[in-house]
Image 1 (cartoon, one colour):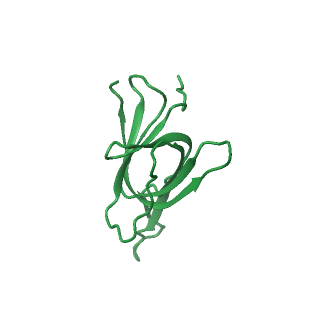
Image 2 (image 1 turned 45 degrees about the vertical axis):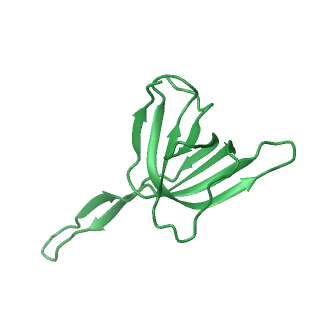
Image 3 (image 1 turned 90 degrees about the vertical axis):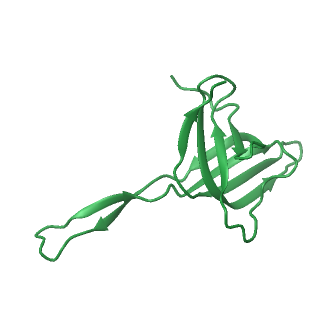
Length: 132
């Protein structure tokens, strides 16, 4: 059974809510092909490996007064969490560390302020489920 994306939250590892997600795009994962053919082989040989997931773009309603912006010279990634769906037990949570590549804040007349984050993922994405 599918669940609704309505109410999905985007948060930092410190727990402060950045916003309610309006759109999200994972950059995808592509297998790299490494040619391991030796001079004595009679046919081509390859080994597949997966590079990191690349980038993720999250657009959300801004729910705090100061959106996170890229920090000059910051060498440490920030931990983030995406909690899918509205309140309830068993909602999936994707946790990951990433650098903030860019932040765009949009504020139109008679519309909610939205922030779009482009993040560079630095490691594995872990999935858990909410307990409440």
